[in-house]
Amino acid sequence: MYHVSQDARSKASAKAISNALMRTLEALPLADVKIIDLVEIAGVGRATFYRCFDTVDDVIRYICDETYLQCGIALKSQLDLSQDYRLDETFIKPYLLFWEQHTNIVRLIIKTDKIGVFNAAFNHMLKLLMVQFPEIEIPYYNYYVAMRSAISTAVLIEWVKSDMDLTHEQLTNLYLSQNTDDSLLIEQLIQRSHQ
Image 1 (cartoon, rainbow, N blue to C red):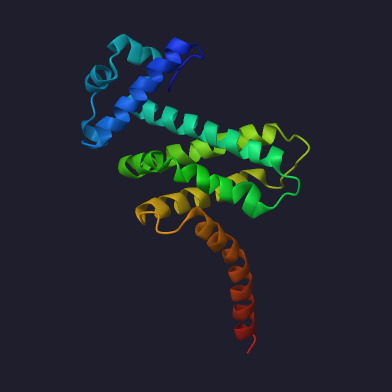
Image 2: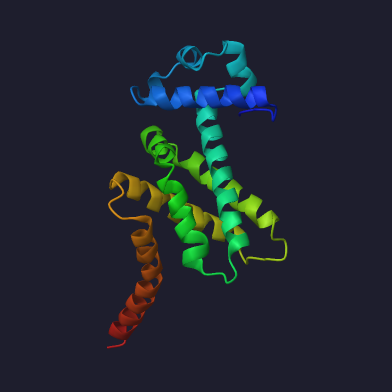
């Protein structure tokens, strides 16, 4: 568990440690990362590390949570600016645009194989967004979150693994066309099964 307080000094220490981990992972696998190396690179003491984090995995958790917090703020501001809610412009495009600018975090998740941590951060972001809209009720909310989390994570990871061979606009269009394509495919399968 991480326990970074909201005071500026604690947040600065956590950021320095997070940056040190990101740099270290460019050269080493996660299993070889040592706390002593992180504190040296970050320029903080060992006690400072343990005031903020219990383990190196906690640093990854913190990085994901903080990045998804920023993502949630960006999505909320997009919702606030939108007159008419359109899924492609209000959520998908800004979501992909945000992650296009934060691919280093997705690469961290790929390299460390911490997809569960990434999904948990996404789930937390959705919960924080939903608290701001108490009038909206989503049936089977836990399944809704699980599906959104799994799909968004899988798409982001594939996008980064594919060297972002599509722009965020192209990927948005592909995502939206999948819904239409799925409906057409299901109709064709049903028609064939009745022949």
